[in-house]
Image (cartoon, rainbow, N blue to C red; front, top):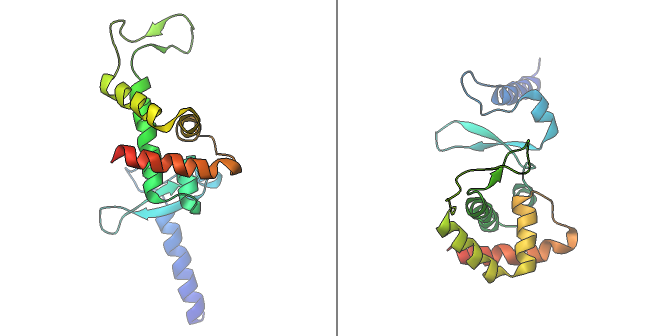
Length: 163
């Protein structure tokens, strides 16, 4: 066995070790899940440890991974989704078995500061940009090719809003 073959075998063994699940931790995907996505190992704050990330699980991550949007724009998209869910995640969530019985508190007004910020961002963005962000960030639908420029503008406006 030559040096080159040993070096290549060592690299493939190290690669396999990196993707194997570690006992007591769920930071690696199952083999079935590994086949369905585009995975990469990212460094964590702990030295020498990495976690797996699927770059196609969310359209914002996919666009960032392909270089279509910047890291700041992707962060603004995640902030938009968090604000949208906080503003709309209050009372009145319906049970999946019935359409007529709302769950939650009757006297609950939801997250008022988040609702106020969400409305202010809606006015700041306008109807079409807000709808495009909602489709991409919240509903997880990939934007059409002609909408990429407008999505970038909307994410830039979100960056200004969240600063």
